[in-house]
Image (cartoon, rainbow, N blue to C red; front, side, top):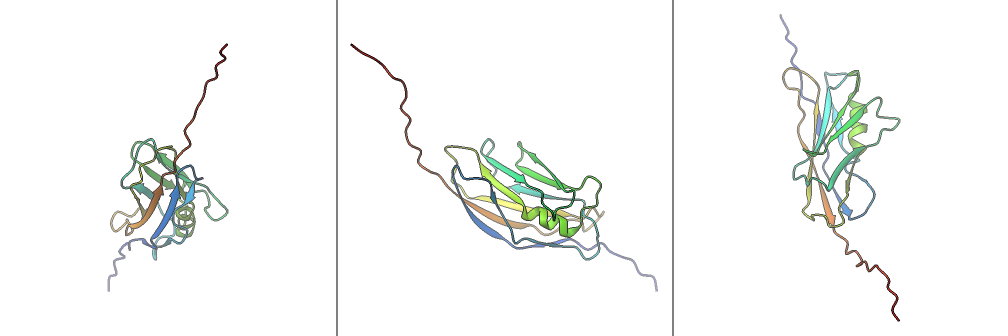
Length: 158
């Protein structure tokens, strides 16, 4: 009997919906996302994307913690994609799960688009086939805040 091993896809689950108000601090997107891979001890990378990205407004960020190992992040301001990776490819599924849970959203505009943002999460185990996980979606509902008008300039008249 000859047995041929087949790479199983990583598995991601757990959607979320959060509210974000203009001028708020960066807010965690999905603290309950779950990642597993039955046959891979270290993953290649994970990507978090804003499907309807608004350039100049939307920002995804990552803050490492005790559970994320050596995972680092890079945000592409042109595409709205945050890539999480382990420099020496040693990031475990548990570390990538912790990293995905540590991804935050912020909006830098004082007049943001209030269209809900669709955030997608995908993990890649680096295999030559069956390497991508299922896609998990999270929704960010954005509320614009009416800013006070600004009056400036003083004069003195006689």
